[in-house]
Image (cartoon, rainbow, N blue to C red; front, side, top):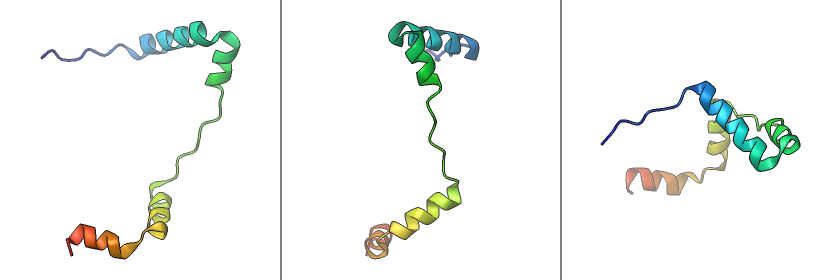
Length: 66
């Protein structure tokens, strides 16, 4: 088994932009690159949301094999 060789970041960016331009055209490629990105929740907030929706009895039964 051979070790994977990664391309330099600059090469990946250049090839990615070329693919976008060729596949979408210049206007849509720029539009794609400028789409708003979803903000990530911080881990504490995400964990609290998960806990709020958690049905505790089945979860604990699954974890502790009750």
